[in-house]
Figure (cartoon, rainbow, N blue to C red):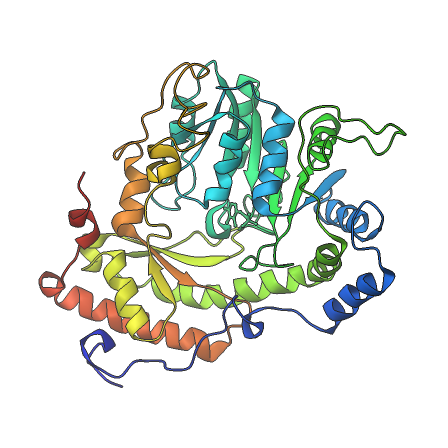
Length: 432
Ligand SMILES: *Cc1c(COP(=O)(O)O)cnc(C)c1O
C-alpha cells in the first residue's frame, strides 16, 4: 500500500468506479419495474386522470406511512409546492427554512409569493437549529419547512411543538429521508409535521426519474394540495370548474408504475444503506477531528462527515479533493453557497424586475440575503462538511476502500497540517 497520497502522485486506493445513483449499477431497478411500465403503456392509459395506477400508488404510500392522505405529483419540488399552496400564505407572508438544502426546498415558497426566512443549523448535523427558528418567528410567519438533510432526522418533534405554539404549519422535506425516524423507536419523518414531502428524482433512495409525494393527516390541507396539483379542478364532482389558482403538477401513470414497484424495495434499500454506513461510522468515530452523523433514525441518503478543521488538519474541501484522487466519490460542502446567496434570492430575480414579493410591500421587512446571515450554515459549506456518496449497492469491498482512503488521507492531514494548502481556500477566495 502506497504511503504517498494519490493527490501527491501516489497510487490511488481505488480505480474501479463505485456503484452510483446515476446508472443501473447503483439503482435498484428490475424486471418488475419493466413489467409495470409496459402494462401501463399497453393499456393506453398514460395519464392519472384516466388510469388507476397513480391513485393506487397514493393509497399504497399513505398506507406505508400510516397516514390517511398521499398526493402524487411531478417532482419533489412540486410536492413541496403542493404543501406550501395548501398553507395558502398571503403574498409577503414568511416561511422559515434552511439555507443548507436543495433549491427545491425554497423555490416553491417564492413561487407561492411568500418570503423565505433563513434560520441557522446545528453544527453537528446541518439540520435546522430549533432556537434559531424560534428567534425568526414573526407575526407574518405561516410555516416552517424542515429538511432531514442526508437522511438524518431533523428535530421535527420540537419544531412541531414550536409550530403548534404559534399556530403555524410544519412542512417536512423528506426528499433525502425515506424511512428516517425521529429517534430510537420514533415516528417516521414526514408524519410529525402537518405535511411531509418526498421526491422520486434519480438520486433519491427510490426513483421514477422524477416524481413527488405529499402526505398529510389533515384532510383540509390534503384536499387543497390535491386540487392544487390538478388546476384546482374538483374531479370528484361533476363540475368542470377551477376553484382557485392551481397548476398541472400531475404524475404520469408511467412514473407511478415504476414508483409503485420501487416502494416495495424501499425497506431493503434503506436497510442495506444503514448496514454499510455502520461499518464506516465505527472508523470515522475513531479519527480525531472527524465526526460521523448520528446513526439513530438515519437513512443515509449520503454519508456526511463533520470536521473540526484544526484537529482534522485540513478543511472538508481538501479532504474531498484528496479522497477523489484516491478514487472515492466525495465532495465538500454539499452546495457551493447557502441558498440565500444564489442569484434568485441575493439579487431578487423573481418576477420581471419587481423583486416581488421579497421587497416590501407585500413583505413587511426586506430580508437581507447576505453573507453572515447563518454563520453555522456558511461554516459547514465553506469548511466543515464532507459528503461521501452513499449507495445501497455498496459491498464490503467498496466500504473497505472508503475506509482505507479516509484513514490514509486523515493520517496525512494530521501529520502535516501546516503544509496542506489551501486549508481554507474557499473561505479566503470569497470576499466577505
Ligand atoms: C431533491 C430534493 C428536492 C427536490 O426534489 P426534485 O424531485 O429534484 O424536485 C427538495 N429538497 C431536497 C432536500 C432534495 O434533496
